[in-house]
Length: 600
Image: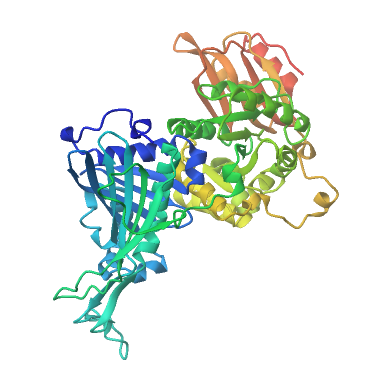
């Protein structure tokens, strides 16, 4: 065993404390492999360094947030020894908080609790009532051994000799007058049991990264004597250590040797699997799926959690795939819908994708007309390649408002996409008044009470919440809501679910061979007829006396432009809707001096 595999440089405590650097190397090293991190129980780590090294993290299966704050480091001739305060932060509504000191309860119920925990380094003193123990890290300066140790009372008890009265005016008549009666326990926290999960994740991480099995030992010492003001009725202090490599013979690890680390997370078989998770991203025409996908990919790539994408468009030309390609491998399935005519193309497309770019997650972006129920049926045959992920539906809040769906109801593919979702992205939240947007949210909850609903502006959400939702149902060891068995309606019982074909949707592609201005584009959109739902493409746009390659996006009555990808030479417009009038569009285009010809 050598620490140099973890921290490839000599330890030099004379230039500054090295134990925080070792801990950072442990945490960052394991999170480079998301699958290994999950298998060890990690559910996210956040560094905080405003006033010194500190970290907050979550460890399965406990819902609490853990904290570590660097306290001090001392050095000897051949080794260094660092200490870290260990915290446990229950949620404000968690019943566990009742066993903590009253000051901790007061802090947790305050408005700044969450922010203080996130910036633990700056608020460590204020959050002291949540400190339950200590983690020690020792290492040989030559990197030949490493030791981690947890010290905490079995139960942290605080006896209030004088009692804690109810504040004046807070007690009702005949109600108890004491929050804690004289001689009663103000707190009784199972400190060691809570912290052992965090320690097991740390020690398990060291074992994985150092490729060495630890020497695990457990012993206890007598509790600290009570002070004069309040008796600390602690149980005995428990000490759990995990040592790697050859520690000095003069200082053997005390305590009883254990066969394995207590509290170590037991991963599910799918967490040990090398198969990627496959999500289904759906949403009606023009809802903002591709914009949301690009934001999501930026979030994942920025954390080195690379994803691959399969994009399906209802038309001959794949604009969305062109807009998405950057660091991401994209497989395009065009000229049909993955929920019906392209179902057989999904398997070879997925095989090509995984062969070219192994990824932790695969995102299937369906056409805006796809019924997720039919897509999920197709995915049942892909269990040898991928694990089931989330169904995420992007909703155009503006279109729902203008269509009156909040008051008149919604049906067809739009309803199916919302009902089948695990997560609903209520996009374009900034385009509506607050009351109108709340009406949309109420309608979405009525359609699907189990989904996680996240408001979005231009496809942006708090992606950490999406991560947490995914981790929560994975830790629950159940299927996501979209995969739960449901009572089939008659059409489903007969083996068929509704598709866009039932509603009469069709697409028409118009090559654009000459520049066009905005007014001409608007005339073409009007000529397509009242059934037009969506138009998109790349054109040479006449603007301010020049020509600019631009992406055209039309949905819910709004026409928008953005810069076109530099490597895209094709120029076209795709019209999607019901009872479209392609001949009128071509005639309007020619009348506007745009060289165009119809495409099937």
